[in-house]
Amino acid sequence: MGHVPRKRFGQHFLHDRHTIAKILDALDPRPGDRVVEIGPGLGALTRPLLERVPHLHVVEIDRDLAARLEQEYGPERLTVHRADALEFDFSLMGSNLRVVGNLPYNVSTPLLFHLARFAAGLRDLHFMLQREVVERMVSTPSGSAYGRLSVMLQYRFEMEKLFGVAPGCFRPPPKVDSAVVRMAPLAQPEPVAMDEELLAAVVTRAFTQRRKTLRNALGGVVDETELQSLGINPGLRPENLTVADYVRIANLASRRAGQAA
Image (cartoon, rainbow, N blue to C red):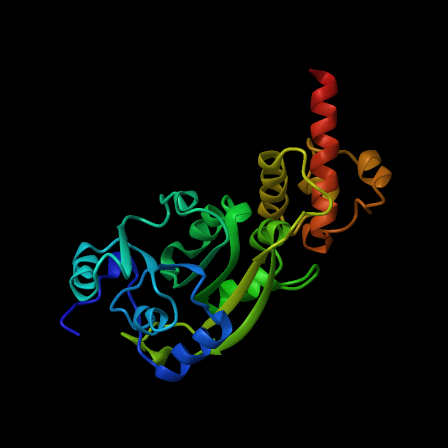
């Protein structure tokens, strides 16, 4: 490869042609699509993408890898953004973006939350992630993997686990199994959160104490009477609530705060 994978960037380079072909088939990029690849690395996915689209944007934090890609392709085919995807402003590239990438597993959760901020400008996202993370993303209420990540992403996106990927498909192989997930922004969350920061705070508080009942886990946010007024049993646990339940709890707390003000 001529490049030593850097642990601090969580670099595991996908090389399996069959897996790359499956990702491309899932994405199905067309010439008119505006595609952004996060973490192109050695270009295993970049090259076949450029066979299907006339121009591609990539976001790469590793300066050496960014330079290699710039040398291989001219700016008319490839725009290389030398940046940390965790801090990158994806709105700069316009709307209807299609985002794809083999995300660094060590920053995958904060990166997913960062991308959720740009949901209005995204068409879809196709990501390779640690399998455990994908299972948390798509888990349904009362599932063992259902938690904060499930609720906050499902508020914004419809998600589907597409297929699993074995460690041997990467160099160096990670110590965990991987999976590819498709995310499509919802046209309109239902119900809509009046205050998304408050929704995030409520969900975080609930799952920080996920073994407790709601009356205890959300004490100070809502009381038993308020939960019952929403048709929610205070004896349930945080993992038993739907995304809509959390939105309704947050909206009740938001209305109460507005009245107090």
